[in-house]
Length: 364
Image (cartoon, rainbow, N blue to C red; front, side):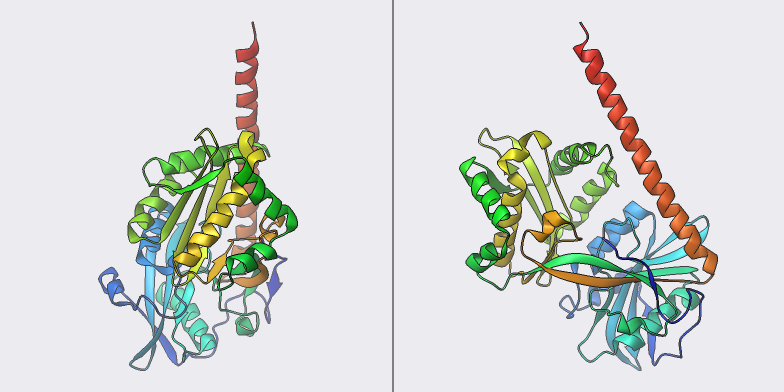
């Protein structure tokens, strides 16, 4: 969920900031293993496994760069270069990648503004890109002042899992607590799921969720398969399933996690079984299991009233972009609107197809 677009000191025209004392040095894939796993701000979205997932699903080239202060490494940058209409774009991340915060992983003594200046220089001068986008959980609106960027505020909810189960449950809305209790009375059971055939199970339910609004999912089944293929072996992907009293799978959820933070990547359920409230039960189970894994923060991956009920606090993170040419920003907006229109058309066509199929089946 985004607020309206905002500008920071000027237009999106490329105006290189003052020379940065930091320098970005791109790393070969063979050097990625040397990156400290626990560098303070690192998330699952900046791991090699996630970069491989993005490279395969977005047809891009992964970029990992060390930020150097003289001879000392003070952090890392993670992104992916893609091509649109023959133009090179650096995303960290880019809209549509089903990826949240990437950007920078900095040491405690690093200067974030100097790091941003170095990364912008990397995008336009070293990599030869014409457009750059980035969202970093630790960047503020003030950090963007003077960089000539445009940005939107990404809205999500964040739960503090250092609280006890009783405190977390009490923070939820009364309606949410009733749903969790109803699921228990209805005999809904939550279980860990194995990766085999889970993508197909999840995606079938996801299609049903979108069909309710005469839409189709914004990504294909292959993306879910690749996510599970790359992330599950790392131990940083939680796959959950809700079963009803008859043992049928009625809801599923996907939760990547690393370094004390878990994210809600996706959830789905069959509409016919939502009355037994499997989605709320699944979320509550995920929260409890995350605490056992040492997770301290649960980011729900976007806004929406159905997420507010779980008691998280509002978070607003700037997702900024900068273009070498002003017309690229306008082209980006047109492309996004065209894609949204295309998705709506696909949804209407799918709805018409299903309606006709049901009609033919009902004819004597």
